Image (tube, rainbow, N blue to C red; front, side, top):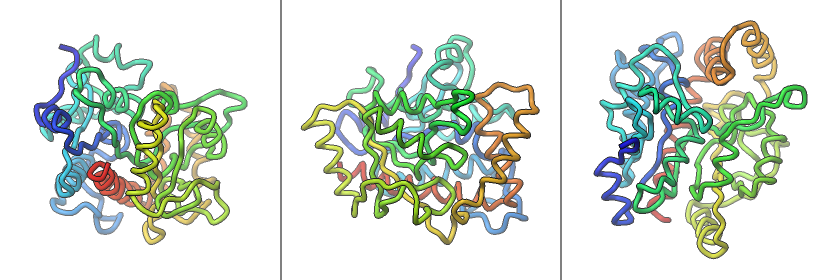
Length: 322
């Protein structure tokens, strides 16, 4: 079989128990594969200082989802299989290589046919959420920030497949907006054009990932509670029979987030550095995120980890009331 669903996820979906989908590209290509660097300050994750950062995050997110009475469904490609509901041991397998490997909609079949391991992006995780081998779709998915329209798109088109997947998958994606390295106004416009509702939990401005939400940021519809978001989801999917996702955004607390509009100069230098490399475009985002960590002396990494844990908590609450 090319697709394998864990017994726990199968049982939960069959009995309509809450399940939260989780992407794995953040583990294979988005976080350091080394122990916490004490120069960054106190780790927000907890327990074992010797554990690799990406695996400590996986353990912490799993604990967060289970602690909220939902089933975590990590999705990945392992030895050519699309796995829906990967164990911690399987997550270790897909991330043991130093190579930053991930797959999107255009190359997941190629990775699988070649019996490779890969983390799933937002787009390929959404593919797993609606796979016909599931007894019911996975309706809630927690991530950090979605992909979208890259800067300089009018000279060179670079649009994430996340948008395509969001337009065609009836799952609520809980994120802290779109990654700060993107053209946010263009990304929001494309989300609207693609029929993807965007709401904010206790915010009327579109969050910008690890930065604080600017007071003059792009306006979105504000929801005061998770229950209000759940009501919108039911109307969108059941009453209106729409098949697109809903993007539920959660801003990062200002005590952890980088100040608004502080990353422009860093990103410009990062883009220039990436342009000098002879590497595939799929590595652009992980390269820029790693560049950010170094340039902010770990502040961006702490913010990234905090928002991943925060969004897992919100997604779990949403899955339980949906």
